[in-house]
Image (cartoon, rainbow, N blue to C red):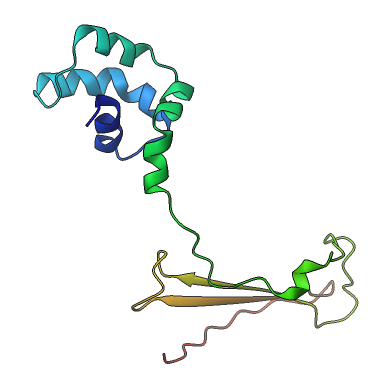
Amino acid sequence: MKSRIKLWVMLDYPCGRRLVAALPEVLEALERHRELAVGGELKGKLLTISPATVDLLLREEKKRYALKSRAKTKPDNLFRYPLPVQTWAEAERGHRGHLQMDLVGSDAGQARGDFWWTLTLKELLPRGARPRSAFHPWPA
């Protein structure tokens, strides 16, 4: 394994900026405890590398660890056509009944086994109305 990848894994996959900031102290500690042997020229390069270069060199390795989408819902045909966009200021708040809805699966990207579904409904309330929340546990 290359030194830059080994350091990145040892430090728990930080971004380039944080990795570069930690390198002087970490390299010294790893050499002192004989965990990593880095030659003089390579050590000099590691200590003078820029955060952007670190991110560029680790780009392929980072792709291997990237999380996949956790979305469980698929877009409906409704979204094939342009929808009018309203800002909060333009929304009709004179009467109740306008809802925003979001469904989230808390399954860490694996749609099997036990996990929570969270359905959030938010009513765009008229001015002066007071929001309430309620918890309803449903059996699986």
